[in-house]
Length: 142
Image 1 (cartoon, helix red, strand yellow):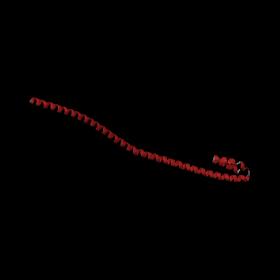
Image 2 (spheres, rainbow, N blue to C red):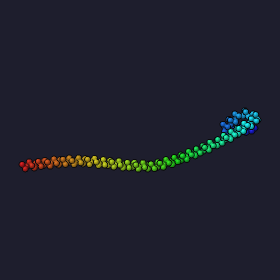
Image 3 (spheres, rainbow, N blue to C red):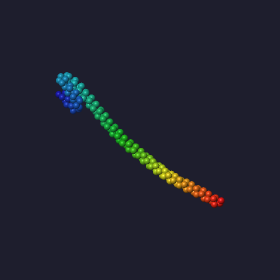
Image 4 (cartoon, rainbow, N blue to C red):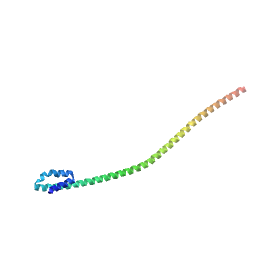
């Protein structure tokens, strides 16, 4: 009778313990052996329950640690993104300013080069005309 109660308790506690108890029941037909087996099974059931409780506590702790780590990671990532997105935007703005300045200086340089070439041509034509005028005045003097 006692063995049947233990078997029912073991079945409700865990399937593995129930299988262990069920495997030992044919040997439990003898009254003195049944008492010893029952005590051993009781001890095994108690130890399995303790192990189950420890594993459940460990799983809860791991779950809570995981949740904490995820929350920390999200906060840190948000801070990192905020901090470096601002810096990235500032760098992009500076880069655009410098590129605009480079383009302005290049266009100014190009216009100055064309103006310089035009001035050189005007100067050389003026010198040529001046030389012609000097030659004509000398020819007229002779």
